[in-house]
Length: 152
Length: 151
Image (cartoon, rainbow over all chains, first blue to last red; front, side, top):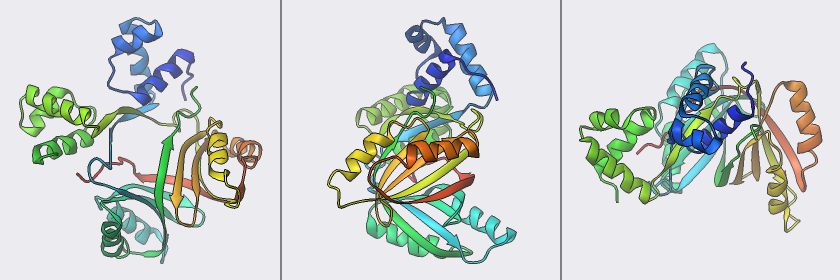
């Protein structure tokens, strides 16, 4: 784990908001030279603190009006079915994220669909038919906020 | 409205957000100028909202992540608003989502270790207003994280 100072945190916060800005532009705002800023970004990337970049798209503008979080319980457990389930569920294009969790459910899925009837199709044809899929709970997303996290 | 080429650009860009403009254009079989013009149009239309750095909280020393599924006291008219305002004040809260379903709100909370999580849970979460019930899911592993849209 690397030690971060306030400037690193500011850089991290700025890049989490907008990773398209150049080291020069970011440095100017923080009162750093372009090479100094670049070195710090490089250090954060090498330490794995910055894992990569993600393109933020407007799901609604692209016709995906519904996001549903699914809690899935496996009907049968064991190494083989767990790996099979993970592989099969990750291959479904509408499934955006798959998390293995401990608690009420075994997996937590984020699923996008055009509308509720499209979601029903994905649920019935693709998710309920997955190897080992058991009980499923669906919660339809109404609003979502991402917070900057403890780097303020 | 988007055409097939726009969708192709989005697919390629989602798959490789680190690509340079030149690489992206080449992957799509476009000139850099055409590719840039289409990207600009999609930004202006609000289809592309931006590019963000993904922070690895584990590398930052936050090894614990918990999903808290919360049911609120809906007899209180301001339950949602009060709860959301208070939840935003907790630095370790990464995501706040509201739902239609069995659960009202979900908080994604990170902590350095279980003792730290216990402290956040006791001092910050349980003191949030209008909570009727909380269920916790402990994150074990992320299997798929790209959040790509099937455009």
